[in-house]
Amino acid sequence: MITNHTIPLLENKRILLGITGSIAAYKSAELASRLTQSGALVDVILSQAACEFVSALTFQSITGRRAYTDEDLWGHEAHILHVGLADGAALYAIAPISANTIAKLSHGIADTLLTVTALAIRCPLLIAPAMDAGMFEHEATQANLALLRERQVTVVGPAPGRLASGQMGIGRMSEPKEIFGHMRLLLGQSGPLAGRKVVVTAGGTQEPIDPVRAITNHSSGKQGFALAQAALDRGAEVTLICGPTALDTPTGVSRLDVCTAEEMEKAVLESIPETDVLLMAAAVADFRPVQISSQKVKRGKGVPELKLEPTVDILAQVTKQRNKKGWPRIVVGFAAESENLVEHARSKLNKKDLSLVVANDITASDSGFGVDTNRVTLLDQGGGVEKLPLSSKTHVAGVVLDRVVSMLRGDQK
Ligand code: CTP
Image (tube, rainbow, N blue to C red; front, side, top):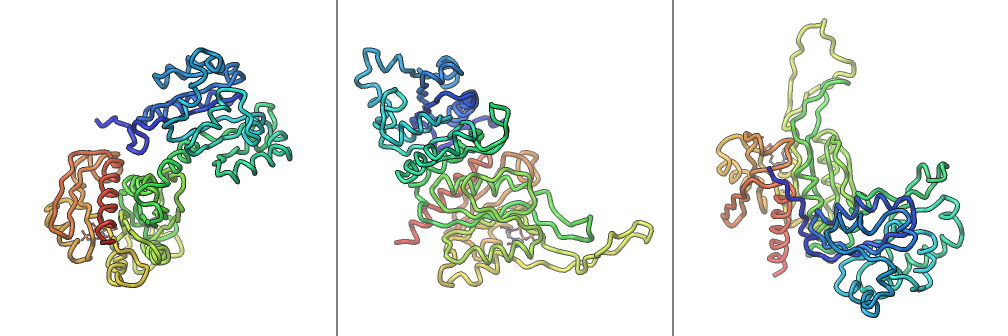
């Protein structure tokens, strides 16, 4: 079983996590945990009010590192502490941030360890407000937030919902998962794919037979979603075109939902002009019913005979027009194979004129459709064959995107 949750983008990066006084402070424990499990070194700074809701020990236990409070501001290391914390930090996230701390930051007030560190950092700053709806809507808070946004501070949320007062309104801190997604975006923004546009397709298509039935396949979309996340982590602008799936959308992608192969073809052709890379991970149906019954086919009428016709090969369509100005130079295809993996994948690479083929063995129970792991072999135009050991789909995505980065570099020469 593969249990490593480390994310290369976060591994050994020092992240500052500020926590101010709000009941949402308990949710920050989950954020600290996600960051730590991803491999980040998390230094937590609690305001005095935060300590009324949660304790430094909570965060020390989660991060395995010392958590700081205002007592440290007046301790014997105080004169260098905030500079030391700020120095080399990759990102400072303050979640939750109260209206009071927003006001302090917007005016450069530095009377606590949390706020003095905010003035000392040279890394991006992200804030996730949490307060009562009336306080959030107040002109003073809105003006302070506008000022911070002008200074390139990323503001995540707040979200609408039930507030601590019992009333409904906008003021709940965004969920840790969403804050984590935005932190990932900020950390990746100057990565090797910054300024590049990537289109990814994912999941299986559905070809309707009648209003209740369809021809589809077992693709879950997991590998395609992992590719989209890996492209985001490297700084790319990502469009994700997917068949029906219940997977969460990675923070920062533009997602287009489609159903049939024809809809996917249209979405791909509309999305790829001015794009650098197409990663075609979707399991597109190869055949569809010639006729779709507008009414449900009734059992009493006997077993129907389905006449099928081929769908368009989207990849072949794209590579046929490869030299069109602004079309992707790098086109990666996937080959789902149940036998003669390398041979069949090589023939797809050549026939579809691809930059790279990711061939996966769909016969193994720990590879291919639905599971979180994959067994893949990468085949490139130069005749190279790289067989990866059993890996998480996240790891496979990272390897594919690293190959894309080096192909783009080669392309520039
Ligand atoms: N593909 C496509 N359009 C289709 C079918 C497949 O663009 N109508 C793409 C897939 O997204 C994948 C690659 O072609 O990247 C190979 O898909 P696969 O199903 O393995 O192969 P097919 O070309 O459909 O050939 P076969 O089913 O005979 O193996």
